[in-house]
Length: 114
Image 1 (tube, rainbow, N blue to C red):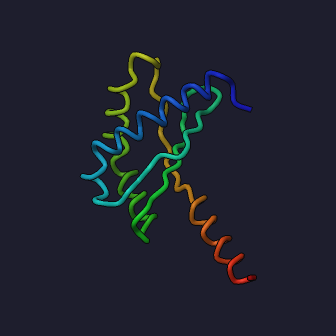
Image 2: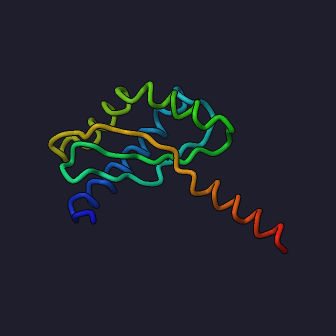
Image 3: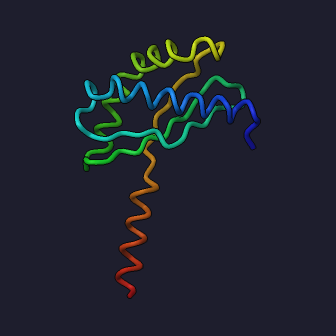
């Protein structure tokens, strides 16, 4: 179970990392829509798992790899935005959030049953 501080920092990172992706993401991955769906921070506040939802492309793994290659630059931009609110910027780990894809798959299966 996450503590109140973990939830607060997770939400702070989620909002600000989303803004960073909007500003700098076009140079990294092009015209694909990438949004931050969730940010889960570890109990010791040293690591954050950021889940990204990627729309408009079938090569989600390739786009994620391009973003991961630029993690250092994105972490610096994030640090610049939240440096007054957190002592140490956590290590960033990126994952694809496939919840929406799973929803469409289940919806398609339910349509076949009808």
